[in-house]
Image (cartoon, rainbow, N blue to C red; front, side):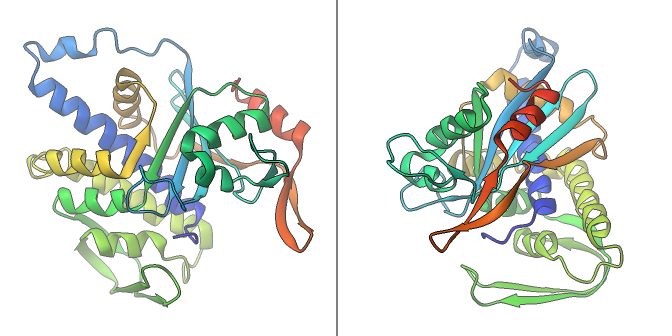
Length: 297
């Protein structure tokens, strides 16, 4: 799972927020005497929300031992402009980790202390006080797709790819054309990266099509039947300290936002070998200037 590319992780973000927001909100609404009242007091207290989103490769996100976060992205959503800013933080960033004598790679912090220590480490890197994190196991996407009965997409080309070294081995075998993908095929569709005529733009367009189709399917009667399975998978494959009301409000806003209003950024810096180990040396001042420019404190 370490080879997930940024475009796929953007899709993960949207799926997580849709599932955590729309489905949890639906469950709450079904049990309310007056469904309109469920939103009272759930309005955002701030202009924006920021949290550290982490992707780990273990089946049980709550078992951090011997697991490392392969992808880390600062997720920033502005409620007024409905803009999403995503700042990728290279996992190989050379940082100081609380309790360790020497600097190490950032993703080691997840192994040492789970998402809490990783968030603490990132805050120390950037001089920020970000309070929230959301850690996710990639199987949550597969489970979510299966729970809604599959997602219909127009596969733009034949997709064949095999990686026997992946764990588990990755086998992608999809034919071009309109079809309904189950969870396993959806993972293959989202991970496929070769053969697009316009490279990154083509992959982003394909993934956006998938996200929009998922949202449409998830809000149909067929999709709503999958609510219990989605929630079960959410509990098993995610871990977060984001308050319930913030998650509901964020999910509600994301689903009505323009998914093209997303800006992806990366911390400035350069790769470097130190003692035969490859690190990413982030530019401390430019990195802090970047997050401040987005109103992240």
